[in-house]
Amino acid sequence: MLIFQALALSPMLLFTGTLAVSAPALAESNPALAKSSKALLGKYPAGRLYKGRRSAVDLRSHKDARTFSTRLRTAAKNRPNFAGHMIVTSWGCGTACQIIALIDARTGKVSFGPTASAGIAHRLTSRLLIVNPPETIAEAYGNKPPGWLKTRYYIWKGERLVVLKHP
Image (tube, rainbow, N blue to C red):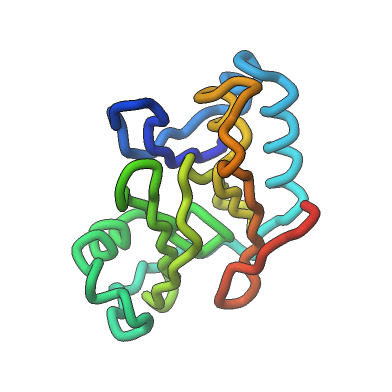
């Protein structure tokens, strides 16, 4: 199961939310993209999956956490969905702008990722976070995406996201 979190990419903002797409459903719409995302996420397996009790959000763990306390507390009620123990959440910050936050389910520690314009893709069993996934860009723009819209890849290492130059 791939998890996509995206803002609708249209002249009018119609949707902000999370969409879980099965690999077979994605493959029907674009087989090459589905296979590549699934393969990439599989190349960076998470360690042991955390199944314990989720910790309360530690609003002192990041300078911006208090500003987004309601969003973070709401997200922390969810099960981990990234890197085996992290809870990834996102919300809109304007047109084609999404804030990405990560909460460690074990400790409650908050991290903020890069901003996205076309959503994110991730999986519980992978340490790879894809910002502006090619599937989302292709669905919105076909073969002619705007030059500023680029797919970026990050790997979760310890307590932070690290940019991957060549996934």
